[in-house]
Amino acid sequence: MNLIGMFDTMQYEAFQWCIENNIKVYCLPVKRGDNRYAIEVNNNGNITTSEKKYKKNEVDTKVWELYVHMYLKYST
Image (tube, rainbow, N blue to C red; front, side, top):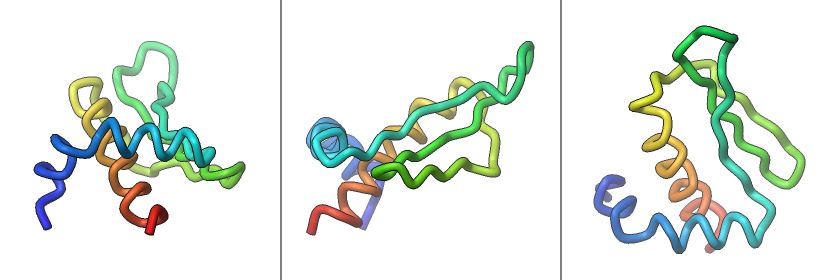
């Protein structure tokens, strides 16, 4: 299954489902003056922070991809 295709067609449905089910995905700056971001997933209070750091032009897409991933993993 192609994630990019799902991302295009499912992103808002996945976002809405995740928010309604207390799953939030967001980016955090690594440190002041650094243009890299970590991604944090809060799944009903269980917080996971990415080890990988993303540039600004990558982080937004990755957040949406993670919303779709969480939706597909937990909604069925």
